[in-house]
Amino acid sequence: MISCRGVWKVFGPKAERVVGSPDADLPRAELEARTGCVAAVRDVSFDVPEGGVFVVMGLSGSGKSTLIRCFSRLIEPTAGEVVIDGHDVRSLSTAELRELRRSRMSMVFQNFGLLPHRRALDNVAFGLEVQGRAKVDRLARAQEMLDLVGLGAVGDSYPDELSGGMQQRVGLARALANDPGILLFDEPFSALDPLIRRDMQDEVSRLQRETGQTMVFITHDLPEALKLGDRIAIMRDGRFVQVGTPQEVVAEPADDYVRDFVRDVPRGHVLTARSIMNPADAAATARIPADTSVNDLVPVVAATDGPVAVVDDDGTVCGSVDRLCVLDALTDVPS
Image (cartoon, rainbow, N blue to C red; front, side, top):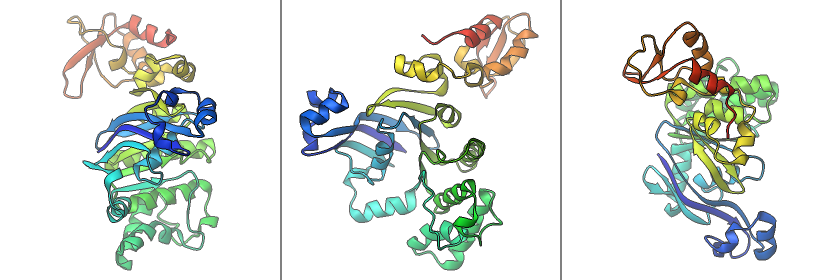
C-alpha cells in the first residue's frame, strides 16, 4: 500500500546537493552552518502493507511530521520515492495528486481544523462536498460517520459547543467520510488530556479493526506507539534508528537511544508468548495463544508444572513457554 525508498527532505539553498553527500551525516547545527541547509528527513525507507498500522515515534524535531507530509506532498520530498498503490506520488500531475488527496487518503492533525461556522455534520461532510457529492448523499454519509465515532447526537452542534475530545472525534469522522484507503495521523491526540487521549486511542484501534484501513500514525509518546502500532519506527535526527514490532523494540533495542525510551515500559504488557517462547516441547500439555501477554502467562505457568505449548491462530504449535522464560521476560533489562 505504501512504500518509501530513500526519502530525503532538505530545507535550504541547493538542497539537492546535500542528499547522499558526506555533509549529510553532519550534526544538524554543523550542517546548517556549513551549507545553510537543514536535513529534516535523511534516507528513510520502509513499507506499510495494506491494512497495517505503522507508527513513527520520535521527539520534537526528529523529522516525523515532515516525513508524513511528504506522503501527500504537502511538503515536497527532496529525493527518493513515495509509492502508493504502485504509483510514485512525486510523479503525479496536479490533477492526479488532487484526486489522491480527495479519495485515497485522509489526514488527521493535532489541531482539530474544524470550520467554526459549520455544524459538526457539515464539517464531516465537507470533503464530500469538495468531491461534488449530492447534498442528501453527503449528509447521510456524514451522519453515518458520526454514528461510527459515537457522536450521532451532536450533528447540529457547532465546534465551540463541543469538548476537545468530541472535536477530535468529529475530525476523525471527517477523515473517514470519503472512505480513504489510507489514514495519516500527525500527533492527533497530543493536545488532549490523558483520559480523553486513552479513549481516542481505543477508538482508533476499534475503527481500524472494523474498517481495515491502512494507517500511519505519528507520535512522540511511546506507550501510544506500543498500543497502536503493528510496527514502530523510532526516528532521530531525520533517520530511522530502529524499525520493528512493539515486542522487538522493547525486547531488543537497537542502541542506547532506543534503550532509554523503553527502559520504563512495563514489559509484561507488551511482550507476548510468541516473543519469549522456546522451541516446541513435546512434553507440553496446556496450550495458550501466541499473542497472550506475558502478564497473562504468569497464572498459566504458575499452575502448570511443565512447559506450556504456544499455538498460532490455526492451532499449530509454534513453541513453548515455562516459568523460567516468563520470569526472565519480566525481570530482564534490555541490553
